[in-house]
Amino acid sequence: MFNHLIPDSVQDCFKKGKNFLRHDAIVMFIDIVGFTTMTENLITHGKEGAEILSDIINKVFSPSIEAIYLDSGYISSFSGDAFTSVFPGNNAVSAVNSALRILNVFKNLKIKTKFGSYKLLPRITLAYGKIEVGIIRTKPQSTFYFSGSAIKKSTEAEKYCNPGIILTDEAIYN
Image 1 (cartoon, rainbow, N blue to C red):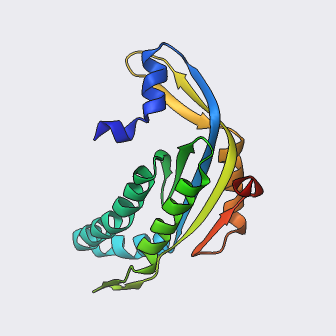
Image 2 (cartoon, rainbow, N blue to C red):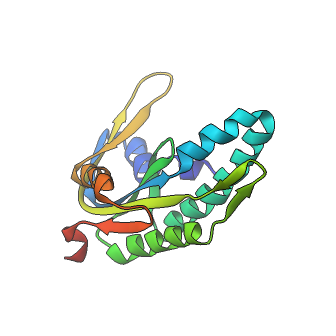
């Protein structure tokens, strides 16, 4: 399980004593529209609402994460109801297949609870470019971060992406 928490590229870099890695990648950014409203509603219903929310999170995030790893990607970060994943290299087919699988998860998702029905849709953006992985070594615990043009382009594109759509940059087609 922990192998999924720390990407192989970060583990390899750390083991080799390196603090920086730069490579080409396709980055997928996913923001789940409707999640915040649903969460705010369900948490008003105490423990029962929290348990329902936990079940919904598992139904949404587990198959989405599985789709990413199935296509040789990995999660680089989570931020509330959004997450970023990286597909090393320039294999657009893998990244697009993963995005389509994730879109399918939501297409078939029906969320009906005793506290209401909810519609969740992802905004999915894909961008190709350079990414940098940095390791900050401290005692007793080190950390890592991701940055780069592909991450910046994919997160910025989210504001132009309608819910239920996959939006790619031009470099994906080339």
